[in-house]
Length: 399
Image 1 (cartoon, rainbow, N blue to C red):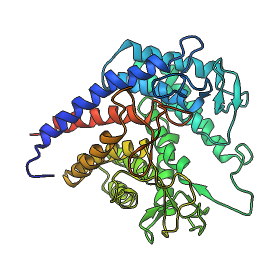
Image 2 (cartoon, rainbow, N blue to C red):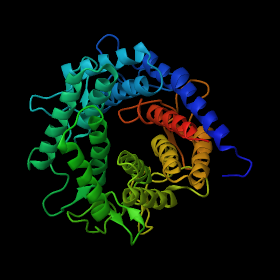
Image 3 (cartoon, rainbow, N blue to C red):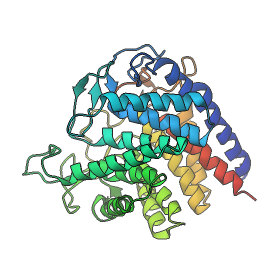
């Protein structure tokens, strides 16, 4: 940390900014323009000014929005309108987002008519954390039980051949980082409201897979796709590094290490992943975290490879605060300032509200919409809530 920087003053300023941005900008934008007061649920395909571009509803975001509203209620202010929005969105999920086989859709129409179903379980994991957080907010244990039941069903879907269509044909055997990491956070959120051995078992399994399969020290990288036993797959997909996902995984592990009372081995794993991923992801020329890298430094295959998306920046903001809290090393506050300065200098739309989502490598806006089926009220408000909570905790621990 710069010698002239006062840590207490720095954390106080960021706590205030996170709370103010969340309560006067981000949540009001989505409650005004996204919340569907006719059919229930939330729209996310919004133009720069909040105008609805497409009435298709992302099922991912029904769970994500309900979670964020309850999470804000639990950690920032107990505002009735946030809890009401969470309940309305959960009601929409219950009424329209589950198929008869117990799995969830990916897209539904404005009125809830099913439009699309995919082979993933992310619709389910986001619904689970919404139910768990709402249970925490209201004390309604039925939502905790439902979250746990759906979590167990997800484990069943993943363990039963044929339930989820494989990504590849049998000649290509692989496993992905994304579902492995998301289940850590999902289980942790459920564990806060109901106890069950399956939750700790899942976290332990995912941690083991990350350490033994997805971390590849020969590249100093956590890879997105590996073989069934962690084998390196020398293809574009197998060489892909997603710095944002890796940094998100790092703070999930830091949070778990904290839950365990300061598990040093797990924290070391988390910091290793963070440090590797920062080196791969940070753009020394233009600033900000880049989208994709190739661990052998070939050109990445993804067309958006050198763009700056909103969410890797928000995950890095959270991760740097967790890293500082766990270590006391002001190096991580320097990184927090570095990523925060760049993020807040490029993504917020000071004229129309909310944040842009997609920037060119040089930080110019690629397109100005505030949402689509993949960007909406999740990463930005979650960062602000986590950031506010962590700054408050850090300030409370200051001498």
